[in-house]
Length: 269
Image 1 (cartoon, rainbow, N blue to C red):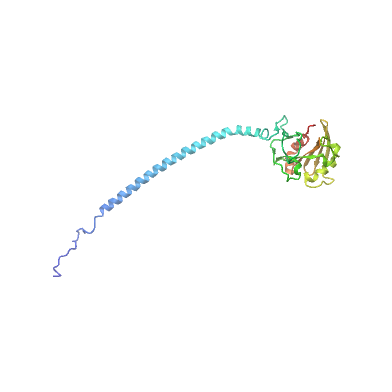
Image 2 (cartoon, helix red, strand yellow):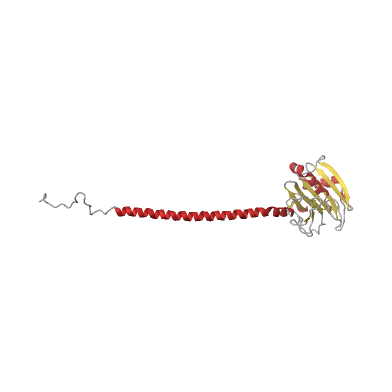
């Protein structure tokens, strides 16, 4: 009978056999947390070790940097002392006045190309901090440009070596002096377009001087705004050294530039 049928439903308070106890699950959760905690502890230990290694490495680098800094000043002084002399071919010194001396090295090639005979070893004083820079036939002086020097704080210098045939027809073995080629006004006017980029006006030349050094005539000019020029002739060539400065450079280095101008020398053949 339906009313008399046996019921399989559990009694109140009796555990349902279809469900397992939650205690193992709670235990499993507890074990998982413990494992995570252990892993975290291990990670912290690894991180601590890595931090210690980094600190030791930084300390070592700091000590090395301090040692290098302590050594550097004397080494820098030595480098500056030899900045010009020895590093640039032809430069020696400095002398008692603090200037170095440049003498054209034997066999040096300028912008002249092929076919030029050996050029006399001209010389001049150069202040500390000046550097030789490359020459190019694209310059105003073209293939007659032999040398360039520059100091961005003081100015620039270039030297032209030109055949005296520009002024006078002479033989290959001639030994001409600059006063035989023309007056100072004629010489500077003849070179103005290639050394200044334009012809000179009547009032551009501020000072003109002449001098005899070792039996050779020299011309000197001061030209607006801040150009100093020295020139002479030896053999069948005319030599002209030009120094240029802007206003700031002139205020700083006028004395150095004048010393360099007057020191220009070309030996007799």
